[in-house]
Amino acid sequence: MKQEDRVKKAMDSLDGIQRAKAPEQTFAKIQKKLADQRKEKAARHQPSRFAWVKVAAVIAMVLCSNIWAVTNYLASESMTAEERGDYSQIVTDFNLYENE
Image (cartoon, rainbow, N blue to C red):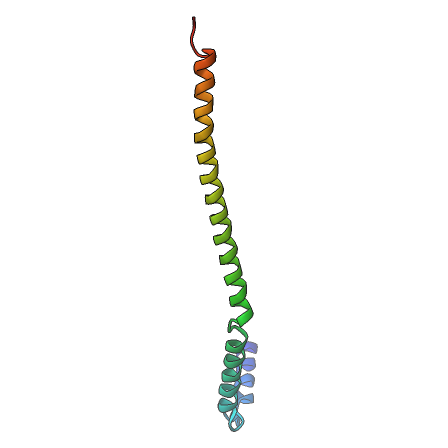
């Protein structure tokens, strides 16, 4: 019986309660705040001109280093080709690789 009395007392306390109402223009204020936040976020995430300069500088450095490496490689290839001719003359003059 005690439990039934508690339930009845709780239900009686709910008599006369009205539905809660939101303040006027609350939904419009929330939408305005969300729109402002989106605008701020979009403004913060726009790449600046300085960022593009950084990207261009990195691309230029990579391109220059590649060109430098290729030219050095080609220069060393041509030098070794000339040296091979000299070494072949030494090998034939001194018979370094023959077992005689």
